[in-house]
Length: 149
Length: 323
Image (cartoon, rainbow over all chains, first blue to last red; front, side, top):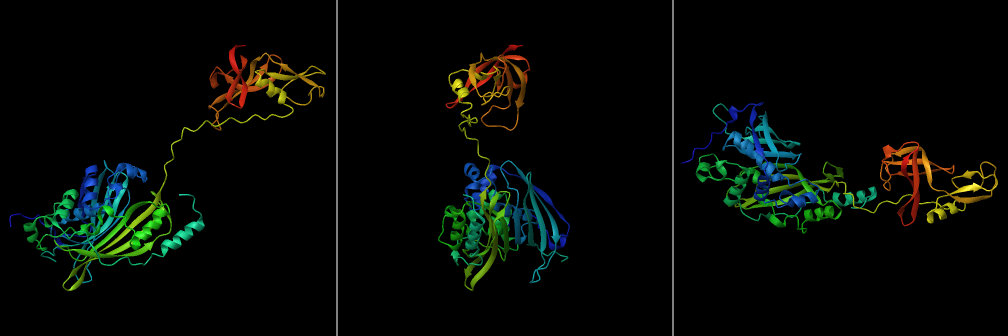
């Protein structure tokens, strides 16, 4: 192995009430278009300002597959490469338009146990832009158990 | 979309509600296998540097043991590319066509709920099927009026041991008619001023206006002048009268400025003067030559005939000096 992986959090190291470090994302037009295409979403409202306007939107806006991906990235950035996402449930509100900034914040809300006995961690995530909450959601992960688990 | 009556709405809802619980095609195969280039593009665009998605050695050092796809790419594998949304040869496509045909041409995703049973590995080809779970009643949202549609997609791979469920993807979209911005005011033709009403009593007056003459009545019995035109004399009750042409000169006896309501045919605000002609009758008319707030009682005025349109010429009074 030539690459040292970033450290991963263990289940034992995480407590209910822990707050994740915020992630501030400048919402460039490039980000919105590049992620739309990388998620294979060719809906015009995610890359064509004129057609977006024709559909009643002031500009292009981020697609939901990207919001979903960024929420997942936020969690694995925090907990490390051993993290296994089990569930991501999001709801969209204020659109992410170019020129805005989205700040993701998160709080550990529970440490539930799956039906098969797997210990899990549940995190509430909010991504806010200047218009309000773009995304609110809950992410459930399985972390390495750690020495004390 | 034209106005939709509640009856039409109920009929439409009945049509789309029938799709609730309907299973769409089963075993639809993804366009591409889970692959490194799409994962790399996704990770670069997202700014996701998690090495388990792109670095085989780093991935091998984790419990995953090999490169895996980002879990949240689940829906990416089942996207249909540029043709998405055009195909109507599916039950879901047929349902969506009902919406676009009825004015709900815009779409926005509002909810996504994914469960991941295990990570996807390079080379795996996913298959999926789709259930239409719910179709909402008509809702008014910040974007417009429309219906929420919730679908549930089961995503699996076909292996030696048969079908293996990999994940589930519940998705809610809003199909809607956007709120219309207020249309820009077209440079429409100017609204017309109220039409004159000509009758047997006042026909002589309007005939005079047509000739550029300002006429008033004079009783032939008692010589009392009067205006506006009326059948009888208010002083002696005689029905006999004659028309007399005014010189059109007078003074502002009183005035008022109209601010509201804003009649489109008038340049608001404007002044209306009650003009006392030198011959002793009073008439109403627009005051010209000064702004509405410069009109004063006692100003000397002279009649002018103003043509507003082909059918309407009326007298107005231009300020020519102080009394």
